[in-house]
Amino acid sequence: MGMTAVIDAMIYFFVATTVVGIIRVLIGPTTADRMTGLNLVSAQILAVLVLYAVREGRVAYLDVALVYDIFGFIGILAMARYFTKRAGPA
Image (tube, rainbow, N blue to C red):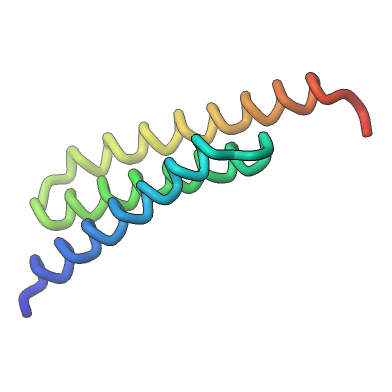
């Protein structure tokens, strides 16, 4: 079993777990569950991008993964701030 086959298997695994995360985002039931699922999906897509870059041997895909990760992190922070302001102090 070659290295590309292992990377392909890992990509398929991450795509399958991304589907599970999307189900968690859609079903909920709480906002915290949805945000956790969204964070999981973001991390899984990042992993797929990195694995694809390694498989293809192209550094440009790593730049795309880095920018995606930065925007994903900022988005999660923005949503967390929005939902904590909306919920009010504990």
